[in-house]
Image 1 (cartoon, rainbow, N blue to C red):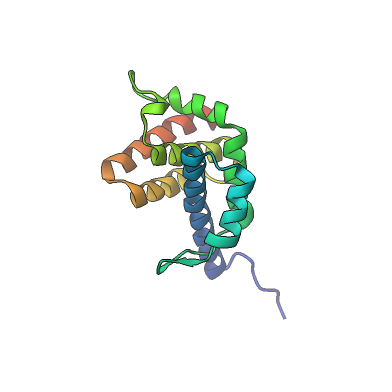
Image 2 (cartoon, helix red, strand yellow):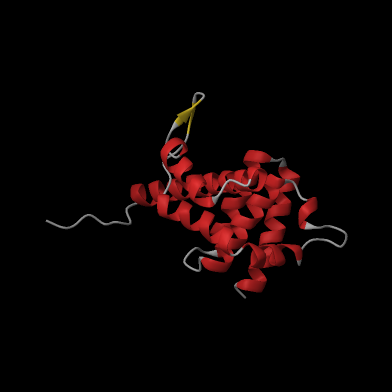
Length: 159
């Protein structure tokens, strides 16, 4: 009898969905951190116990890859100055990070973190996933902004 292949299409799809859920939840956690100043350990506890995979107000949250979620939230928080500098360097003249919508900042920060720290995730995957997250909060124009800015950062940090 042969061992099951851990990379079967069903397993790969489930992992992809779990990572997408992790990214969306990480953006929500980073937004909450920016809005309320909630400490990261408190955020992680709240999301682990009350949001990830839960049903809230008839909305079912997908199961997330907890370690991946934690890495994005903790890593983004730990490297915030470096991430913000990378984002600010790609903004148009006259624009500052403070001028961006808080949800947009959270999306860009999480995406930038992955580009900087998660070499195991292909650039195209990072950009596509955060463009998808942007569609959950914004219109097409803003999603295009996420695409362009993360692509510019990727060229700097991934060569």
